[in-house]
Image (cartoon, rainbow, N blue to C red; front, side, top):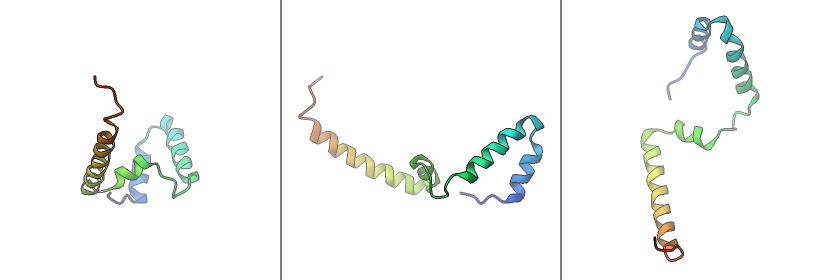
Length: 78
């Protein structure tokens, strides 16, 4: 993920209409108040490189294939 600078954030904030400033302010306060290590699995996944995401999804697909093959005897035939 590309690094974002304070200057870039400041430039974006300056472009916001005054009516939207409270929303931006509350978003930033919320981000500050959250723990740095507190990251959802979805957010962590998005932060991975494309290759890492592909590898993880391939690994999960293999695991689920094995799981469904084991469970096939327990599922009724449709």
